[in-house]
Image (cartoon, rainbow, N blue to C red; front, side, top):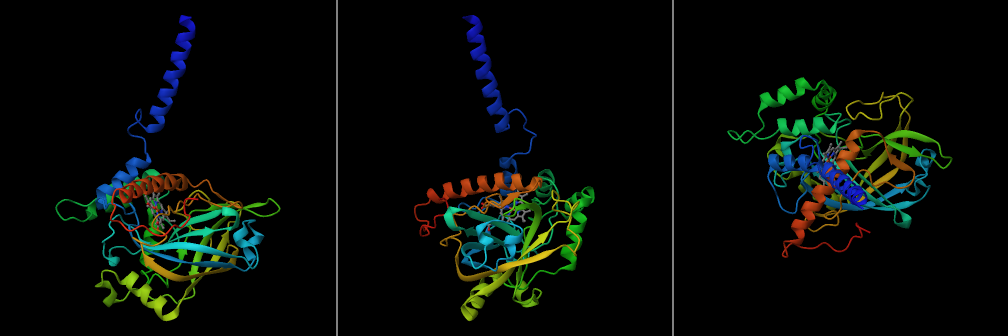
Length: 351
Ligand code: HEM
């Protein structure tokens, strides 16, 4: 009997230990989603109901019209010829402050949720840079620490940032790219990149690694001096364009890796001669505020994917998924605690 009790006790202790480990209680230095999201909050403040990163944005919607070319690399229904897939999206700028001036960062973002037939979804969050600053989640966290505002100035300490970039030479290609590509004048004339690689499987079961991008039909133009002084020029300009033209278009370009191309490192671009497939046209034809629009209650977790697309071995993807879920959890709890907060009409985002 004592032996049996000891065995039961050992199982309970092992289970409790397992939970404590997963919760991070035994390894406080381990990088967890709460540490990342808490640091995002420490840098930008807590703005109840808003995303902890890319907090300032607008909801949009439209559809993706497939031309069938993507079916050569993925069996996902969204790539079948002639198929039109409804899309809920969001344009935003990085940072945790929903009231930041648009000129505070050189990057814009486009997040999309494709609603495929049979209830499948493809969610993606893309940035307007072709590559990312860091390779690992720990570097992302260290970059956040280095960017925290100096209490004396309210701005990041340039010396601390410089030291971070010097200590992490993987950041150099990103910094060079940003220097060579001035920010766009509009959400409409920017290209947006998946940056992370994904594993595509075609109807015959053959797999290939792919990065995708959305290339605008609207010609690129750099940010103007007048825009620099306008706090909300990105959303204001988007409304004006949609009112004037009714819709905006991008082409979904699938870039296929060659053997040996890095699939786990978002700081490295693939050579420019890789196969590129124009898989169809994204049409955005509606816009609404992020407080009331359909994107509000969507978590654009880049690992929610349809059959035919899977995550690669890029370590950023799992960290993104965990951090987005926690951010989503916090902001939707805050929304629920604010009875006056307008509820968007049901969007089926959680179904
Ligand atoms: C470890 C790396 C990263 C972390 C921890 C991180 C964290 C976050 C968090 C917490 C959010 C808010 C999510 C929400 O509440 O809905 C967010 C939003 C976003 N992130 Fe990241 N991110 C990472 C890397 C990236 C990368 C590589 C990209 C670009 C490919 C990216 C693009 C975006 C976009 C587009 C959004 C806005 C989504 C929306 O409009 O709702 N992030 N990120």
